[in-house]
Image (cartoon, rainbow, N blue to C red; front, top):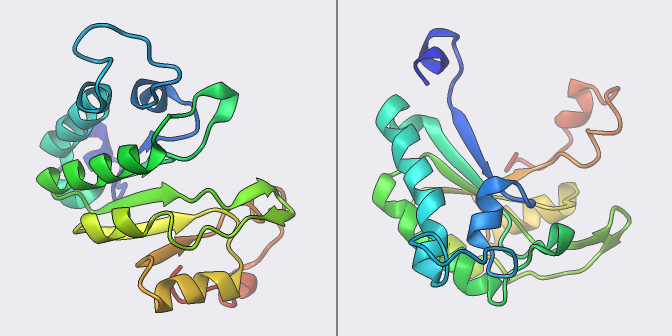
Length: 179
């Protein structure tokens, strides 16, 4: 981690979403461990929180964020109670004072088909005391509305930029002020 300081990065986002290793520990449909990292919600979240603590101790809480997707079930790695999982993580992250929590909403079935879940992350937003970032198929109007309604501090836009590297900074300026 020392290299993060020396190479000029502003911080680290811990990727705890979308069936990556941390997400596999968090979700009860894939975590079948019987030790201190399996079973109860608290035990399943232990690994993620230990990673957050280690990174915070190395580079400082103000340089750490985490991305979570409690509602996602990629490769059948879902959770039986994603709302409780997301809320527990949001509350637990407050202990570390990290810069932000970046959560993925369950809004997308396909890149072209949105499912509105306007209040799905609201309990997590209320529980987390730092900057709360949401993502999942937002356009400018949706992003502005999420910020205006207090459902998020910031909105991340990525889906349309990943397949289209030609989007210029001019396009970015038309996106949500929450971005």
